[in-house]
Length: 317
Length: 259
Ligand SMILES: Cc1cc2nc3c(=O)[nH]c(=O)nc-3n(C[C@H](O)[C@H](O)[C@H](O)COP(=O)(O)OP(=O)(O)OC[C@H]3O[C@@H](n4cnc5c(N)ncnc54)[C@H](O)[C@@H]3O)c2cc1C
Ligand SMILES: Nc1ncnc2c1ncn2[C@@H]1O[C@H](COP(=O)(O)O)[C@@H](O)[C@H]1O
Picture 1 (spheres, chains in turn cyan, red):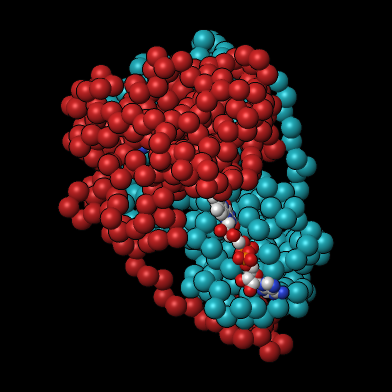
Picture 2 (tube, helix red, strand yellow; picture 1 turned 45 degrees about the vertical axis):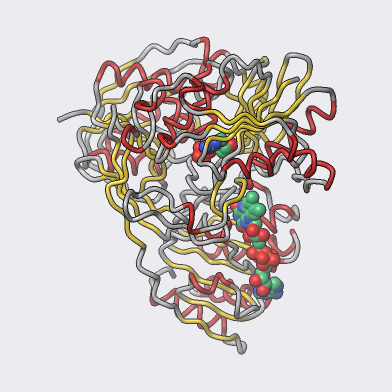
């Protein structure tokens, strides 16, 4: 059985859920091999093996911290040349897509982005045009390079263990051409990661202020163990940080439950949440287009409905 | 400072987009064609850089004959010249081909900065800037929400999940900008008139030294096998709050086993 390379997304060894999902997807195509770049592999090895990786290729070094995207591409290109895998699967993050694009150029192969499923013969399913059209596509030249969206498949624990294989990482001229001189982090909230969360509670212009996010939206999110999202109107107004914007130019989310509060449902917002499994809407305008996506909607004032709901959810605990 | 901004002509975001049944390519006639709105931020950023010092901004687009309108539209924001790559053989090109054509067209022109939007609103791949950077062997300075040129050095803030990375490179470089960078201007009357007379090169594949057999639908690196409209979602329940809105949502969440 051919290997399928899976690029592991992690922060200092803390594996992102999407990486484990990709291992499960890879198992449907061939033998999953994880590719782990940067520091922290020791802590990750057992988890990767337990989720189906037979081999973990580890490339560690300062290069992955000092330079953007390219060092990872160099490692993947080298592994593709050596192992001739059936496919390379990469998480559909901003970095992941760029890694996929450059890798495709480097190995002269086709690239498919934002797949939600991949069949045994490597046909990818994509939801395009904001989810309105389902497309099946296939790479016709070279080794398929495919980026996969978070929450497309459930991780599978197989109880296996992985063999570690170290890969040398050099800094190529292309990698050295950019240098990260400073890394700036916004404060972590302790809530689930927005792109991975099973439940997302979002607020829009109707929330009215940053105070509204703190006193109305965040408490509902916390009662449900959810991540907080925001529309562009809310992030542009400075009510909530840009990192939490959902939509065309923000995050794409596909949670089990999306609760949209005071969001009208502009096409750019829907582009980022349309494939959510269940959608609940609170909006005072019965004509807001977001109601078209609602499995359950309430026409009403979020400032009374949402706190009441929060109290009810908390009372059930 | 010589800057080139790559802009794509796309169907209007607000219109319904469709694929053509015969060959699974984008049905460009089904919706109004506009400049990819995310590319306007790149044009704006290029104009600001040139206005703060000196230099010229050129607009480059690959696309069918009608894409010339989008090149003029982008020029009318205040750019100086346009390059339009148009060839029947390009129909159905994928990202590999698009990046190849753009890179070929850019080669040897001596641009200090090659700028892009962060994503095309139709393809939504966010890969073309990185691919062009790889093909030209120039630093990849992408997803910038701040761009600072100082002499022959470039610094950007690359937007990340956790905040941003401050990244440096030398010029020439490939830059893509995100929509938080600036507020694109509206074309002035003066610039709309100037755009009509701005120099425009219209080039075929042969003109940029590419063989038609390397691009287009038949030579694409990936193919659409089939597509279907997603079945419309069954209409959900919508109620009007009469003091019981929260209670009704609670009931719904219980039946769906969320709480
Ligand atoms: C290039 C580009 C990229 C974009 N990218 C994104 C993106 O990534 N994400 C995104 O979200 N948008 C994006 N947009 C913006 C998008 O077009 C909309 O402007 C935006 O989504 C509107 O946000 P909103 O729904 O919060 O605000 P509005 O459209 O103003 O809607 C507010 C809603 O709140 C309701 N409301 C008000 N008060 C209350 C109340 N007390 N109780 C209940 N309901 C109330 C109103 O009825 C209304 O429906 C983009 C636009 C452009 C041009
Ligand atoms: N045909 C094209 N002509 C010129 N620029 C393009 C073309 N296609 C994509 N681009 C540029 O590449 C960016 C990213 O596109 P994409 O990778 O398709 O999401 C766009 O914002 C444009 O700046």
